[in-house]
Image (cartoon, rainbow, N blue to C red; front, top):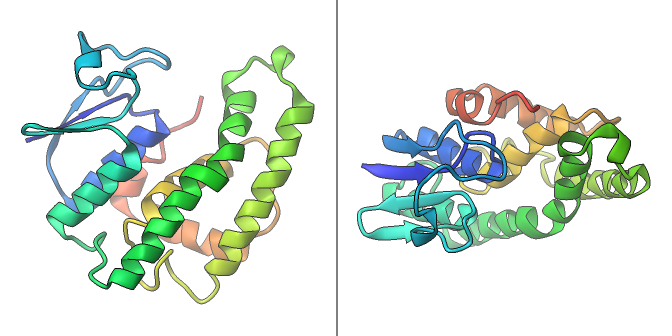
Length: 205
């Protein structure tokens, strides 16, 4: 059985758990109810030298980076997350990279600034700068989703997992958001999925 390490409130852990749920793969969840900033696993550094989450253990294989784990799971279990067409798979990869680079440059400081930082310590000038940038990023995504049900065409794929996990946080933030009709329709489709509700839609606190 696979083992997934990391708390259920970590967005990167949620990505992997959601992928496993979509693939209907059984797994052991270690430190699921752990605390922010602390991995409650003895000698965890033996699995992940950076002591960050998630880590996936599959027999003797140990993987750390969440998007890499998603690609591995999709390729091994070959459910609907895997795209057989190489060009479509490359496009999915592109959007997964977009999430971890372009989008996350502004999502992370926004989330940490508004959710993890006490109100009297928040630098709203910086936070509002990132919120504005997020709107620019999501305008690109909204345009991409025109005439598409999911990131790559009509069906959920590995390309939806990283961004789909992030969109729940974006929609949950206490901010004003532009109207993105295509994103909102896509988000509604994600919420129809049991694995998304179970592993991603965890109340933010």
